Length: 227
Image 1 (spheres, rainbow, N blue to C red):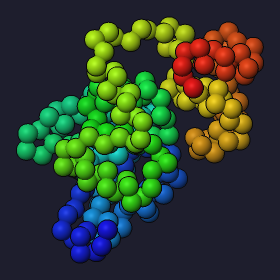
Image 2: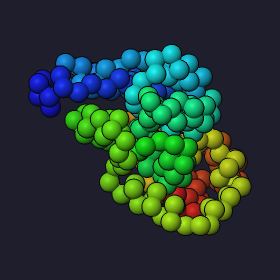
Image 3: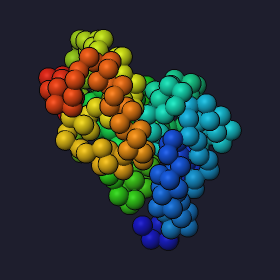
């Protein structure tokens, strides 16, 4: 985007993600207001902080991670429902997550988000997505829109998986990456956590699902189409 184009449009954004390093990176990438037209007016690392900052700043767009301490992105959406429905100055949400799982995409879209993009998105495309959401468009990373179309085309509610429900959101994230063949070190880098934390999550998943090793875990995830 040229400087002249950036001057003709502006958008105020709040960035919600529980990883400070990621927030810093996004801020550096998109927050050069004179160049991009994006002004980052607030940041938050968990659900309570997010609701407080969004209420105080009333941004036009919120970049929202799906997995957050305190209830996740869906809880932020639930508690922001009144601001989203404001007829004059609605707050619109764009999910920005490492997860590309159908259940995560569908969950936040049902909660009121206008779009869902993964963290592999380029800075230029993210800026474009933010402005499109500000204008009321729906924005999705490639292939994720299909999850939403399938979900809303179906009149049947998805079946409840009691085993999966035992896992925390972070444990589900680790589970999917393990099932895709990622090494612990790769998972740690992808999720911005330590290898020791990854090991703890894997142990918890194996215990809760009563599985013995990562090979059984992979078969379990594949059978449920989580991979």
